[in-house]
Length: 258
Image (tube, rainbow, N blue to C red; front, top):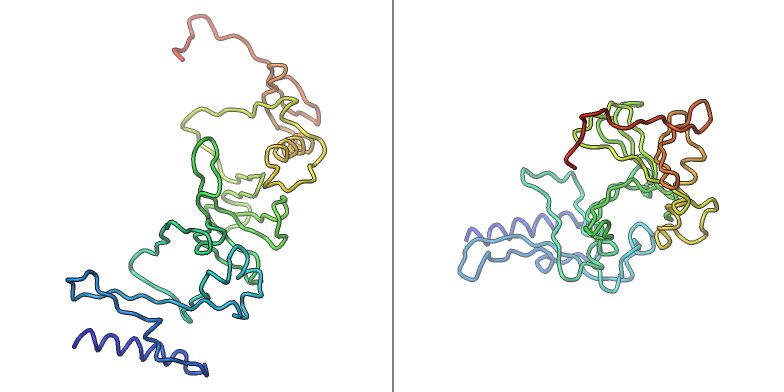
């Protein structure tokens, strides 16, 4: 009796929320109460939408990009603030593609223009022999060039404070405390490329990264420092000129076990 009442209430709510739709059904095929197990009297709720390639939203890039409308159901909308005292979880599955965008996106949060977005994705790439989780603020340029990525700030919403991150640049307004070693960029001729590659940065990432290095050093400000691996020297830009940083051997009696 209790379960029947719950199903009735949920079905009534679903039907009421869609009262303006001329093709309203009673909703029971889209809103289901499923037993926790074959022996259990307790239920869980499952909500689903149909697959429909004619859905008008599939015409918009923000909806169709990375999905196949012949496989992916229409978006399920909650027309109100979603609040829960429990966590929100995105599960993995054997067929990630057409469930997560491109098979990778686990979260998207859109700005006022409804085009630029915060994006979080998992396992699109492997770098340094480990799977990567990625987080960025994507603009409306819609490619992989530097202008396609806005600033992502961590720490506060106060201008000229905290820490900004974009595709190839980070700005730290706050102090930085290291509790481990700091390694300078080891840059040589084989890490630099003056001309920007014509291929997309995602597919031609290694060569594009060399151009990023070149541009960073070419447009660097005073105080920029790196390790010149071709000449085994540390260089720093002072008053617009690159200069060798003076170093000397460790004092007598100072040595390390590593």
